[in-house]
Length: 500
Image (tube, rainbow, N blue to C red; front, side, top):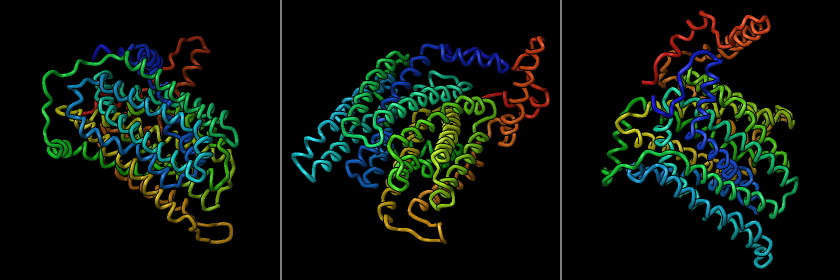
């Protein structure tokens, strides 16, 4: 165990103390603060506010899909950087990329303030020029981000021990999504029902300031010294094939690609569906995004503990089922079989957040733990590039399809119709069903199954909590962390060993 590892402990109460110990570590604490401010920044420039700004300037679905794809497409730069990152230094590379991308973010933040002047000088062409400038700046922003993030996962691998990675990722995503929820509530309050360019400009200025603060905390995180000498650069094809020949890791990459093809375009085109098809206001969309982030926050830590205890595969299986339910609800909405009720839409947003974070945390944990020990940086970089390319392909393809089928509508019967958004949610549902089947082929490091996790969530944990409260009220000093022996036997060694 490294010096950045929390002390080992048993029982729920002791585990809670260890969770606090994890946050008390200087490196983890600075990473958490970095993620808080970084989340404020990127949820504005890469999230719903950017989509709504571009749409208000007349952007097409294909443009918005391409803009969303840049984030993931530029991750392919990791193929070039992977053999070099250990010689440059993890912290040095990430700081350089984050500083450079903040410069281009500042340029984007100034554009809404120049919109009125430009459209007045060039009527009919002003917004088109603004959209071109946004695209160029976002290309540079994401290019620098893609290069810099080559170092992030390998850096975390040196900081966090394997048995704590699930909980760390849950902590990281929890604080990031609390920050995102507050950000979306703030954006909804600023934008109102009919936002102006000045109001958009104000929230992008907040994004720039948050990005600058995040860099301060990132610089405080410890980093191992870079390797000396010149990097041993082998041809790209050689090391990619070497990673691909590891059967377990190849299976993880394949499953991740299909999963992110199914789900990565959901947020982008759900915002378009709500705004254009259902007539939901920008403020309401921001509030629904806030509810989505709240769902992530409330469930992320628990998902991480479940993954650390029972293994990643059963947790990924449960999260996939939850996402299938979510997509089915959205499909019924597009068909007209469910009422367009704000509360129902908010619940559907929350289902997405809870399911997405459960799968994502477990998948990252599994990937880190299964990375080949001989070449972990290369393996993790290939994983990031493959899943990022799938995240880039999905919004571009769906953006093209939704524009092409703009007038498509097929009446099935009175009050029920199949349109382009029905095709979008139906196609995503089919790909997620394929993912569900592929998850079964992943390594099951703890030997547990999804029904055992469900038993823990709905029977074991509530029973132990109620029993602990009862014993405390009786004054017998019962601990909430005591576990019945039968439940211990059921977990089939869930607390033994690490991923092999």
